[in-house]
Each structure stands twice: as C-alpha cells, then as structure tokens.
Amino acid sequence: MNTLNFPDANVWLALFWSRHVHSEKARIWFEQAGEEQFFFSRFTQITVLRLLTTEAIMGKDTRTMAEAWNLWDRVWADQRITFVPEPDEIEKPFRSFSRLASASPKVWADAYLLAFASASGLKFVTFDRALKARGIDVLVL
Image 1 (cartoon, helix red, strand yellow):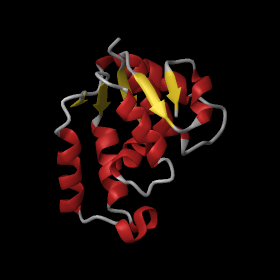
Image 2 (cartoon, rainbow, N blue to C red; image 1 turned 90 degrees about the vertical axis):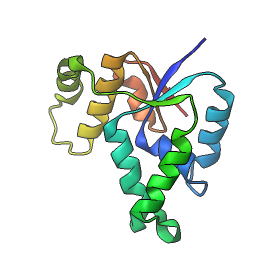
Image 3 (cartoon, one colour; image 1 turned 120 degrees about the vertical axis):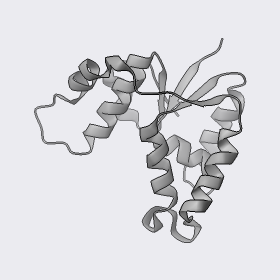
C-alpha cells in the first residue's frame, strides 16, 4: 500500500534535527514507511525553515538561512518526498476546523493543516495527540 503522508512541521523538524525530543520516533516511522510518499506544503516548508533558524528552538544547533536551505535540499533529494500545492477545496474544511467558540490563536495553524490534509486526501502525521479526535485520517507518532 502506498500511503500519502502529510507530516506537520514538528515531525519534519524531528526528521531534520537529530537532537529533537522526538527525532528517534520520527526516524523509525520514516524508515519503516518504505515506499510511502511524504508531502510538504509551502506552509510546512516555511515553518520548518523558520524553526531551523530560531535560536529559542534550536539553541546551539541554530542554522543560518543558507544552512537551512542546504538541509532542505538534502531531504528533498529523497524521491518519496514532494511538494503539494494548496488544494482549491480548502476553504470549507478550514472554516469547519477553525470555528471554535473560544479565542484560540494556536488552533489556526492546526485547523489549516488538518483542512489541507483532508482536502488533499492525505494522512496527517503529528506528535499532537489532541488532533487525533478531529475526524480525519491522523497518525499520531
């Protein structure tokens, strides 16, 4: 079976950075995935590049922008990884996932990524257990 995976930015970061708290878990999943495919969106790409260059996240492993691009290029060389554009049908699921009765600024990105995966027919892969209950195909590592 050829599963179409849409990892969130934190999963990608764990694959890029060996000192990430979940790096081993992410690498085991990725290595066992065999011929499965893995998709970046522009949003997850920018987020990973931003995190790689953020000292508060990376500490002494902080990368320059050029170094972040070099890491990206090494990962991008894997034939199982590709870019997927934003689906035209994203608006309805995005609104559905983000219509909460609370003021939850951190939910916007999660709602967008869930909507992106749903509208694209992709499995959303995350470390965030709370997203499992959102009603789409979610794999929590």
